[in-house]
Length: 618
Image (cartoon, rainbow, N blue to C red; front, side, top):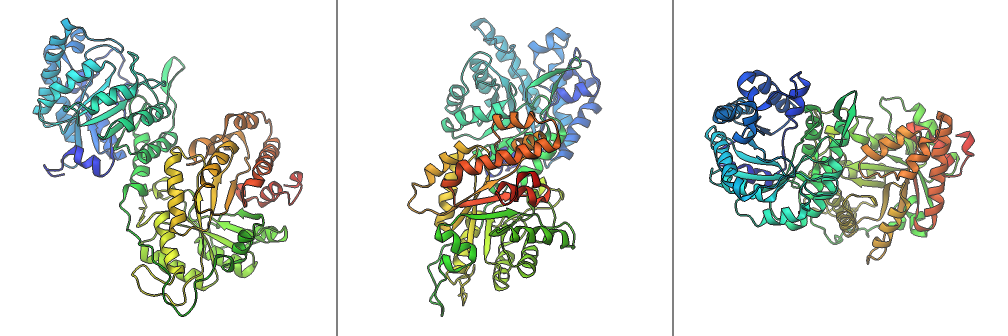
């Protein structure tokens, strides 16, 4: 990190990973709550450095000093008011030792008042002096940022920002909100953000503490439209619960990470954690956020008109049996089957034959589902096509190969008879079972759709003719329950303009959400057939997992409640089939067909959902 690499400029380019809770970690190290945690910088510096280093190992790029309450007013009850400078300088030194010269150090400055308290005229001078003393000590040790955090009184936050600006470093002004999006003093988050956006003393705006990821997300929806400054979020690990006499935060790292990805999608430029957030949360989140394709600048793919090749461009209906059926308006059925983990295809092929005998139109083959390592989906699809004859739909993601490799795959796959593809951006590899792998993401799903459309038009990625052109049927994903529906719909239209010919949705549990999505996209000038994704739930635990851990899937509370009522595994399985059948019946007239997943690769359950066998036989 060079001296010119300002932290604000850096976060504008790429979201930064902040660390997690300091107080939570100190408490769990066996330090009593009555202790002045800031003084530990003097009395137990090894402990503080150990915590910083745990966050470094977890992937944090910004370390916050252990100085949140190290101002004269907050230290006075401990008899430590005269040690302000000593404590803060020690806090900054310890953090810098852990950060080295490659990571950033943020000087943590909390309010002088208590939560919900508003400073009066008589207190302003004392508070200002306290802030100046603390901030001067932190900046004297070279912090890269003054992080004013967990404020609730806008007047005090503006005062702290003014003093911080005097110190000559970047200023992040962060405040705490509750689940209703208000501070402890009752001020709406968007009102504070609007004021801070206009404040020349503030470089970036933050939300921290007060609520968990869900509450922060709701507040963000109100804040982002009123500011052009970088926004940083540091939620708690959910809401606190009393367990065995202790206050615990129970949101697991995976849940925390799913929201972190949503924050990045919305445009947040820095993510960390507050109360209850451990290095495990930061580690899981950091891997996922760094793997997100949205952080990388994609290669631009230029759409090309049909080339003057010797053969005509292949019309959609002539590309495959699946394409012909979609174009005719007949209902399409498909079953999703995972590629095997090893080279034995016997068990999988038996399931595929069962689907063919039941009259299923196609077999969907996921590409590294949840970023897991399995047999190549293209090889799997080729084996299915040659051995069974049923048409496969190859899920092809942008994660694992560069643009040249993807074009080679697609040309080769088409040459051996694989004509149907579902183009997806793909899960970051950091979420899967190979956490040290890296993602490529030269293009996203929109870009790769353009690449295939160009191949179908007779052009390769270098602008050279492809003769004869390919006849690949291009499918894309759609998420009716996206957290940012406007962005999802806009990307859906981009995919259509890039050349998409059909779409498959994420698993549908919320029928009304699907209908709202279809109502919007069916008004577009170009329409493509939409297949609904359907997932038969196996248990209440499975329903919770789908709702909390699978991106883009929302399971309504009434379905969660129905699954929770089941007392046995068999009852749960039958209830899941019943729910899936009901969903299919409700949406039948609005979609072009169904892609039903086979949970645990049990195709009998999928066939039961589609009415091919009795549900008792599943």
